[in-house]
Length: 138
Image (cartoon, rainbow, N blue to C red; front, side, top):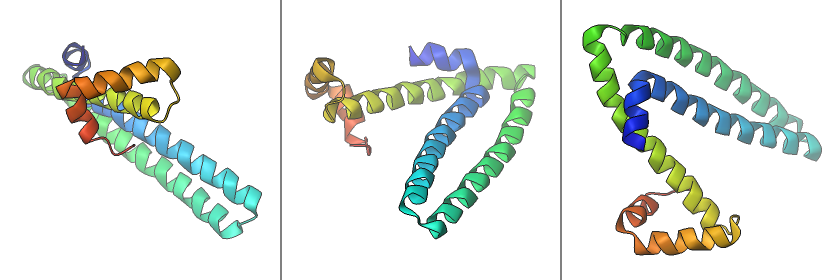
């Protein structure tokens, strides 16, 4: 699944999606921090969080422009094949991230009986146990 997905989208588009996902998660965390600071009445934390949100948006904008240029360059015939082959790695990384999130939600008990099945499968499967050993979310 990850190999086909990665080959289909390529490295540059896959990195673009991956960076957008990471920025979304960081933005959500910063927004939650902002709301907590406002409710606690901590104006210093509120200002710092707003600055971090603006900084994150600026950095993401620059990275987006660079990746857009890289995506255009990857349309050249020789680079196109290399982009597709390198995209396989991004596809596998996406699958590993999905598994890590699913395993984390399962271990925390948020998936109910489905989560119990996932935990049991992780303990029995060598590959899933290996992925779980690198999981820093738990």
